[in-house]
Structure formats: C-alpha cells, structure tokens
Amino acid sequence: MTTTSPSVVTGKTTTAGKLALHLRDKYDCSPMMVAADVRRPAAIDQLEKLGREIDVPVVSDRDASAPMVCTQAKVEAAQQNCNPLILDTAGRLHIDEEMMDELQRIRDSVEPDYTFLVVDAMTGQDAVVSAKEFDKQLGYDAAILTKLDGDARGGAALSIKAVTGKPVKFAGVGEQLDKFEEFHPDRMADRILGMGDVVTLVEKAEEAVEEEDAKELEEKLKNATFDLEDFRKQIKTMRKMGPLQEILGYLPGMGSQLQDLDIDESQIDRIEGIINSMTPRERTRPAIINASRRQRIAQGSGAEPKEVNRLLKQFKQMRKMMKKVSKGNMDALSDMMPEGMEGSMEDMMGQ
Image 1: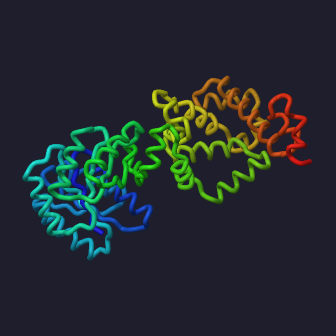
Image 2: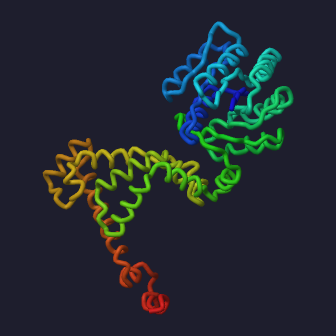
C-alpha cells in the first residue's frame, strides 16, 4: 500500500511519522517513509530525524525532483519488502498551480492506494475551503486531523465531511509521536456532548496494562494486600495512558467540567517521588515507617515530613476501605447504605 500526505497546513511531516509508527505497531507491518517535500530542506531533515527516532527507513534525495524521489522509493520499498510506503509530499494552506502540478505528477507516476489530506483542526474555514479545492483538483480518500486534543475542535471534522463528503480517518491528539489514533465520529460526538468516551478509555487501558498484571492487581484488591509498591506501579500505568486531564475527559459528564480546569499533575509527581524514596521493604510494609524513616524519605524526595505523613495516612485509610469491601459481608454493605435502609438489606438480598 502506498499513501501520500498532501497537506493544507503545517504538521504534515510529523503526521507522516505518527502514521508510520501507528501502522507498524498496530498492524505489525514494515513502513518506509519518503521525503517528497523537496522544496523545503527542513522538511527533509525533519523526516530523516523522525525516521531515526522510530526506526523507520526514509528515502530522500535533495538533488532530485519529488516525482523522481517517489518513483525511486517505490523500487526500494519493493526490494526491501517494506509496506506501506508513506510519501510526505508538499502542502500549503493556499493552493498554487505549481504545487498541484507536482502532486498530480506524483500521483500519476506512483499510483498510490490511498491519499490522505492532513488538516490542522485549529485552522477553521480556510482549511475547509482548501480541502474542497484539493479534492476538486487532486482527489483524496480521507483526511487526517492534527491538533485534535480539544473536544471543541471536532467542528473541523464535521465541516470537512459535509463539504467534501470524505471521511476523517486518523487524528493527532497531542505533540508526542504516539499521540495518534483512528478517528471515530460517534466517539467524538459523545465527547463534544459531554457523554465521555469510555470505549477509547478502555482501549487505552488495554494497551497500558498487561493481562497478567491486571489479574494480579485484582487478586490483591480482593485480598486487601495492595501495598505502596503496587500503588507506584499503578501511577506508572496511568502515565502510559496519557495526561490525567485527558483520561478524566473520557469519563461521562467530565469533559465539559474539565474544560477550564487546570489539573496540577505535579502533585502526582510529588507522590511518586515520596514512594520512590522509600526502600522496597517500606513500600511493601508501610507500617514500619517511623519518625526517623519519615524524615529520611522526606529529605530524599524533596518533600516535607507532613506530606509523607499525609500520604501514609491516606493510604492507610484506603487499605481499610479495601479490607472492608473485600469481606463482602452484610455489615460492610450496610455501612454504605443510606440511613434507614440497613435493616432491609437481608430482605433485598433474599436472605
């Protein structure tokens, strides 16, 4: 499969790298990228750098025309058994005849299977007008939206679909190369309406958590043996899923409430720092942490002793709650019921 990525805005070259990484990791293929934006030496340098970062081969030739580079790359991809071949072609917001002629010659010489139009979700009406013109002159199969890490920007996807009739296939949702995902219009609609996106959240959790680790955690929670070492592992797992504000935004009803809220993730850094300053024995047996140990932990993490005390106290309370729930007895359930309903628990459970 050969893909091209003409673009009406910036972000195209980075998107080529994100697409290569996504396809390789998700579909177990061997992509190759082509630096076909030959009029911009910086774009060639950037794609070569991205190729080294993600370990994907890049074909470039600063002395050849874009169609020649692409034709040469198609031969090399076949020889090296690389597939798909991703062509990072020229692109600008304002379309000109010279650029369109170059893209048409590339299309005719390489005959790509798919042509993606890369569009900045923040550009607004200009991008929609350009997308319509691109489709008229060149034709493309689907769009890739960049900078779609804010739910309010979903309007760009709706506009492009309405004007050109072409779907949005992928979306860039952050600056990092792994912040790239397949676009699901129903999920975006739910997020815009404040209904969350639980499906995407579950998918992210599945990517971040090994099945064996999940079973082990479930067992520890059930037996109330969850310790600070386990807590530290969960912090690392959560970080793999993305920023806390982004994760919470996937929960129903949370998106609109978090829109103007600045969540301070440095607090999580401090908690992780305190736990990292403990010895393995202290993390598995926090009860042994006395005053002198607290002082040492505080100094090692750059925190105040009162912060260490607060963490230990909160963790103790959490363990207590786990133990209570894990018993599964009527007393524990009754404690959670509103006043006046405790006596009816046995009747409700058919006891």
